[in-house]
Length: 241
Image (cartoon, rainbow, N blue to C red):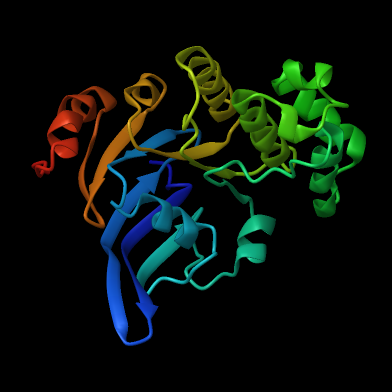
């Protein structure tokens, strides 16, 4: 049996403000297999974005372990994780709104990838960006900005792609187009962990899904089964494991 591309075991995280300690993650467990799309769903405040921050090295876990392709990556900094193929597309997209599309893509060459290769990969995956390549990124539609953020991340050929609220603020048609792109990307030997709040649509492309509530993964299973449990979770209930 193949080992997980990304495995999280009993990860805990507190936020500290002065003398106030706020527990956020209470022992998170999940595993993303190679070429798998894993959807992590749950209401606002469940701990989903904090989980991605821990996995991308932005914050350190209080306890628990993170394994990347079988190697212990718990203490790795964000730059080490990035070099080893973990890439985060954050909520809000993280593009440079005052730069053009091509200037945003140029940022990906810091890993040593040639600019032509960056452009070829980006425009092949998202042909619409080729037509917008001279346009200032802040004037793109929300969907096109999300495409640009994904294209820039994928230009460095990550092994694990972390997507935070991919569909936020976007219409159904563009969301469907983005999820189709996610499905294609996974087929290119990329493991994808996608965090969403109110997005039944992602279950259509997910291979595995989980519901996070109150800092814990409370249910994990087949996307169809998880979809049936979502309404209960969003109404404030708990989901039987």
